[in-house]
Length: 386
Image 1 (cartoon, rainbow, N blue to C red):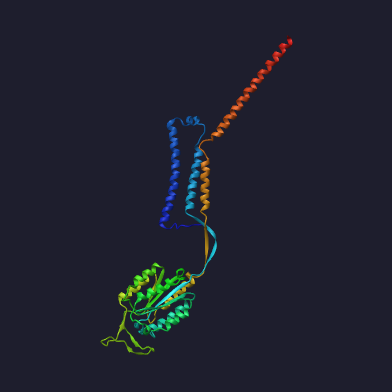
Image 2 (image 1 turned 45 degrees about the vertical axis):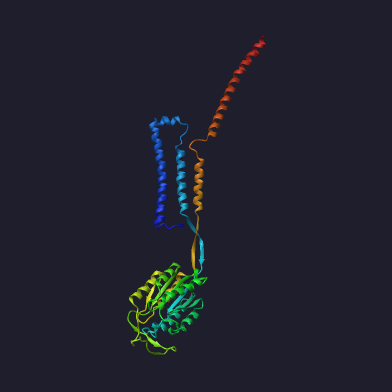
């Protein structure tokens, strides 16, 4: 047996103590009333003499009625706790997982601190993530200055192909608009009719900070909707030169600024704090690339484990609430208590009085008949002598 309420929580525990205190206070009041009646009898006169003046002793009846009331009150509080008994088991079907991968396609992703490049390694590991998390639905958002989205689908290969065919040079607007990309991912989940019943995760893969919007605010909106954001931070604070890549994928040198100096990419402390805040706001995790790794495999392992354990098909024990039984018993005890009076019923007293009166009349009639019979014999004898 168990109860519907968690008695380890402070509010429920305080309410339980209050109910217990109420029962104890009720019993104490009944006992004090009994003592008060005993003291009043002693003040009135000799207890034995006072007791002889009464027609009956109501003490045992009061004790029974008080016990019934205390027990009924206890059962009512037990019913209030909603006791539950094991009723059987039920099968909980597997919960689907919706994952939107948000991948950074800014020019800085051409950096080669991760072999063969940040973007090529990220696309390969995203494809492996999709393969490892079998059974989930995937959506895609590729972004630089503007996001490009692919809706949720169970065809993971289509998502992997979508990412594979894109390059940073294909982005119509340069930059790193993380807030817009997260908003696009949030919109994908909101427009899908099935997604509201699924577990929703956004995987953000980026190497830079957002200089155009407020991604933390978007993350807060996702958190309010129950969507988690996991962040994969590629690159660190060490400057890394950015190769100049042509449309056909050939490296022709390094990108340079207007003064001819090579352009470098590095993550500022503010950007790193911003990415960490995005993850923590939604209860997600942040993974930082280390030793030539992107860190996407860590997120893939976490999602695959979620699918196997947390979201897999389960057998759950079902408990049925049986509060009606103690409540019905409490009502029954109250009815029994109400039917018991402190004094015998008046009808019974009148019946005994009538029965007693009939007995006296019968005795009187029998006595008069006996006296009449000898008188009659005397009169008959006198008539005979005459």
